[in-house]
Image (cartoon, rainbow, N blue to C red; front, side, top):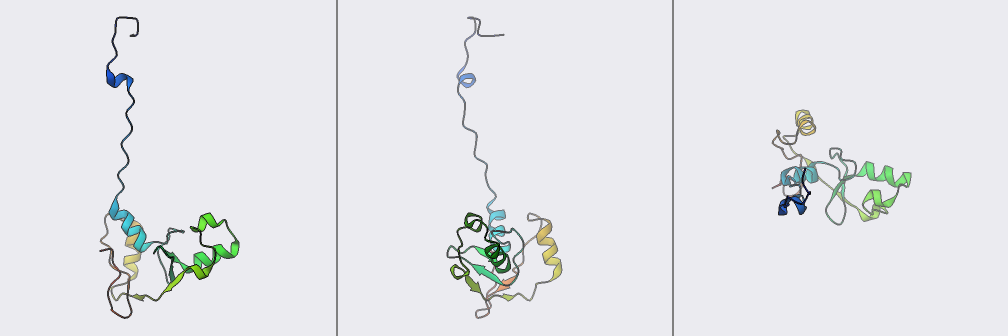
Length: 128
């Protein structure tokens, strides 16, 4: 069975190797930042607000949580609604209900169409 004096353990049997870090899919992370609320993980719906770091939130969710007086660490250190900036976004012309269903179904299989655009420049808000 070993260790009876006649065996010599090899290096790989004695040394513990650090496990490889899990490689995160950058595409999925980018899609999550642009299409989902950073707190509720639900699809972004108007009105949309942003914090000073550029994270996007559903305003209704934030207001509801602030009124419930939940722990501020749950809200990414948002203490008041004054810390947030209202975003005036216009829905894209290609927006329809099929897009919403596909977005919620599978991130990998669906090519994301921009949902909002800038009302002034008419530039689509996409992940590129």
